[in-house]
Amino acid sequence: MSRSRTAATEGAAAKPANRRLGEKAASAKAPKPGLPRSAPPEHPSNRAARAAERRQAIIDAAMDEFIARGYAATRLDDVASRAGVAKGTIYLHFKDKEALFQELVRTALVPLIGRLAAPPPPGSSVRAALEGFAQTFAQEVVTTRRGDIVRLIVAEGARFPGVADFYYREVVSRGIAGMRALIELGIARGEIRQEGLARFPQIVVAPAIVAVIWQGLFGRHAPLDATEMLRVHLDLIFGERRTT
Picture 1 (cartoon, rainbow, N blue to C red):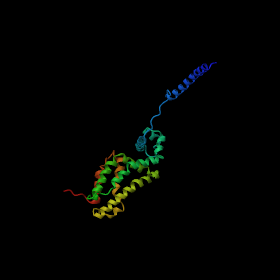
Picture 2: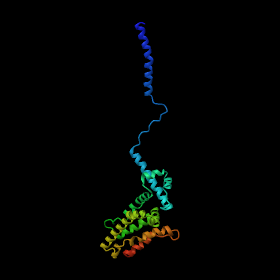
Picture 3: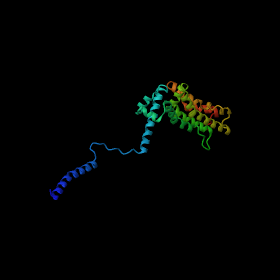
Picture 4: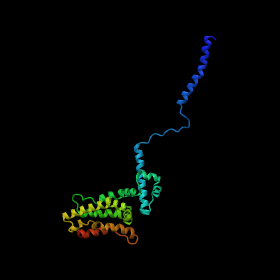
């Protein structure tokens, strides 16, 4: 065989091989048909916002369930169903039912207690501060879902000491401390004559608790004007306000 014929034969054999290599390379570069493309990664702030929304939905659903069923009868399955999440999602945010209830109290009542027990602004009287307390408590607790939470704790707290202890620590003790500070300021200014009130600040807030309980038990029979009742109570402490 001549040298030219050999070269031609080798060239012809090489062309199919080169063609196959080229086809493989093109096939590797071309996208695979039918394979889904991966979605771009979600931004961390979006994930945090969605988690916060789920957490709030769980808290809102828990409030509905606790108020409707009471603490003992509320089940996390029902909370999850009302919130539209899987039960396991609740455990991503809260250890158990008690922790969920604690967060409900912490978000619904603790900030309000901080406002109610705040010292009076400069130039304002202690009586004015307590009148503000009475009005705010009547409007934002007695006839609202916050009042339902208070009534639930009054009704079931003795059976669940952990719940009662938490409520005392986060709400009651702070409210009593703030009220005692107001009373002591009133005594120092001469606005309050009965110094024994500083030892028993519960006397000052007692009508507020009575209003909450009355509203839950007897409000449909004999509606109570909580604001007016608290005003009369303050008249007993400070003396009747004079009008000119």
